[in-house]
Amino acid sequence: MRSFLTAKSSWVATVAGAGLLIGLATRRADIVALVAPFAVALIAGVLVPPLPAIAAEIGVEPARCAQGERVAATVRLSATDAIEGVTARLLLPRELVAEGQGLGAMDLPAGASRSVTVPLVALRWGNVELGPIIVTQRSPGGFIEQRASIEARANVRVYPKVGSVRRGVRPPRTQVFSGEYVARQSGEGIEFATIQPYSPSFGTRRINWRVSSRRRDLHVNAFHPERNSDIVLFLDTFDDLGPYGHGNLDKTVTGAAALAFYYLNHRDRVGVVGFGGVLQWLSGSMGRRHFYRIVDYLL
Image (cartoon, rainbow, N blue to C red; front, side, top):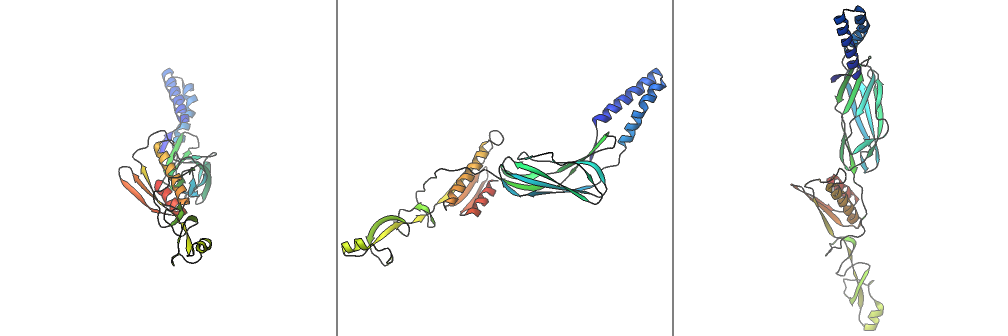
């Protein structure tokens, strides 16, 4: 806890000191008597008891949001002794901005707690940390300001905006899992490939009876199977150049999130490799859950 003299105390001290000097220099008791109340008020105003111990907790709902969305931070304060006119301020990173008046001034009853909810807007992606809380109280005369920093923290994960990708890169070869790419080889699928002689491995439902009757031998329809591909996103994370929120690292993160979302929606396996002095990677997988793993990795 730290104590500071306010602008009011400086003004009163200046008036009282100047009046006392003038009164003593001119030997005029009336001037001294005139400024004496200022000096007494200043002395009484600075002799204030220290700020009682205050406990604080921070909760954020929801704990995850997308860039541009709103979250609510709830600050709960409690004190062992009653405190009047205490002002609390929640320190926010640059990624979050508060809407409204913030916490403001409040009275804390002894042994009770007060909760205040602050609406926040997420301006930029990141693993964002809120806190600490700065608590301020002024003395009754307004001459002394006591300030304490309460170590309370909370985290919220802000996901980047996912842009749209018109068309992805067609893979040179596909994998064995089902996807949306037409494979070059024939197999089970819906894309017609060719007509070929019958084999017991094909089954009877694929027999082309019209061609078989004309050629007097069983022939079957062959199709191209739909397969997926393996996608690896290689990220250069050496440095962040450019203005805040519009640097190359922002473009890297938002672009990687958009590509991962596009390919995962096409049932591809997506992996991420990041190189920023130390090589880091995330193994490839599929599905919506893996998309959030990728975004967490990007954060």
